[in-house]
Length: 306
Ligand SMILES: NC(=O)c1ccc[n+]([C@@H]2O[C@H](COP(=O)([O-])OP(=O)(O)OC[C@H]3O[C@@H](n4cnc5c(N)ncnc54)[C@H](OP(=O)(O)O)[C@@H]3O)[C@@H](O)[C@H]2O)c1
Image (cartoon, rainbow, N blue to C red; front, side, top):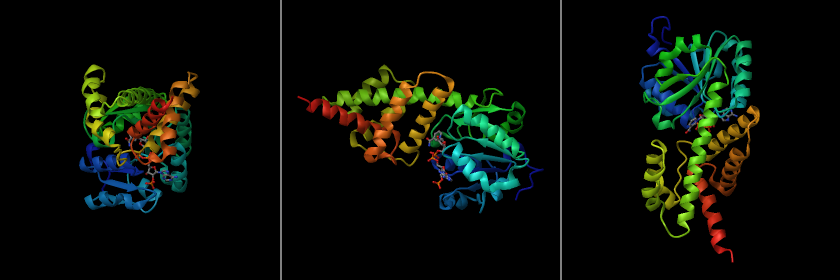
């Protein structure tokens, strides 16, 4: 392995645990930025493209964590993190764990105690962009926890995007993440439901997007939805960059965060129910826009009603 004493922070070795669509993007970007990159995933074959580039596939979690001073985890949730790191034993001692899993502020607090007991430093974080935007200097990543730890590793974190430090309270990154995602899902649902409404009169998603995006949509989401409008018309929702199952997981965390924080839960719960229904209808492996199928069906029922 690379001599960690002699490398600049911009090229420090990094380990990535979890190679779903997002973990693959993080590891690929870190490698492209010159970080010797070690990876581990429950399904080891998902590392094949990274290994072909030159990344190292560790055989065990302990080996993966021991390979680098910094381990970035991008797993389904905090429960999965405990399950995965259970086997790591003493390997966590003296390492930094950066948690980019989805979760709630309470879970972030518990994770700090868990890491401390194992002698590891810990930063909690959240990724505010989809996988293709990882590595762009303006792509926002949120972090909370020890400022000293954040400052020490800022250069490594900056290889993935724009690292924003929110404060020493460890739950802040997750709290901001769930709040911002709620805005995103509510906007997406409003757009998809509106598209289903005009669709009931035979208006295509492409036609509606031409007007709706200019009229209302925020700068980031608007162009993306306009680009995806032809897929709405075709019912084509490829899930290769993130699945509805993954989004339901995020929606559950928004509801649970609202509960934990003592604010109203009806709004996120409704979005969670709609996503669950789309999954029950067989769309779990597709992308989030597949909730459009739920809205369209309800429209059909309404127009068929006497
Ligand atoms: N994709 C996005 O657009 C996006 C955007 C922002 C944030 N995020 C966040 O990034 C994280 C990862 O998302 P993702 O889209 O890459 O996919 P994901 O489906 O949420 O997570 C997949 C990862 O978790 C692992 N995993 C799940 N259950 C496991 C278990 N019981 N034991 C061991 N490993 C397990 C998977 O391993 P296997 O490969 O073996 O199944 C895979 O590495 C999530 O917390 C998500 O909220 C995603």
